[in-house]
View (cartoon, helix red, strand yellow):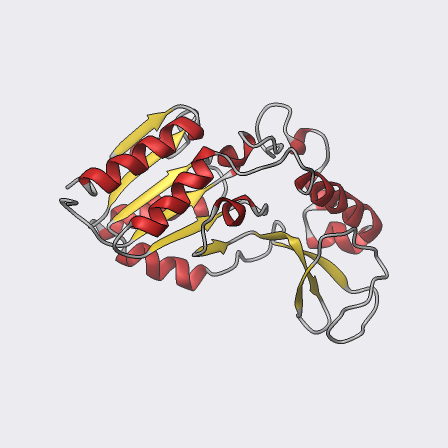
Length: 242
């Protein structure tokens, strides 16, 4: 039996999806070295050139839907933890892909939005969208043309679900960070919030130490596909470290 249980909050970043073959944004050779984020990931960039922005996300969407992009062992291990843990496991992801869902997780909060959804700027309706999005496409809800955009949080916009995240961080017994650089706020500040509350164990599982690694009680380096399944086994067998 676990020696300590309670709610768990897991934060995931691009590192967990990289092992499934998806390009990351910030690593050497990543997407932000190939294209300007000001052009394709800001409201101002969308206002200047919506065709270019739609084309950028259409490329990302097509890439996500190729047959060779699949959930990996880390995604599947987190789904197993959610299924077998005796309390809530909330998965907060900065990733806009659907690999956590495909890996079996269900209690997921996409704080930066979802690539396979679009949003109407006229009525606010959010819709599943698995094909290319055009600058003149019509909203399925209100019928307005030309105001559909990717359901993705751009720089300068407020991430989604922040009140729910804050409540979960306040209540959690374990905060786990997987595959994130610790440079993008507000997610990079979550560990400091948990440490301030002083009640939860904190662990970082990452290919290399993040910018905030020293704030965690445990910081373990290595590939997510090896570290996450092993840590989930440890939690399910031994409980949260006291």
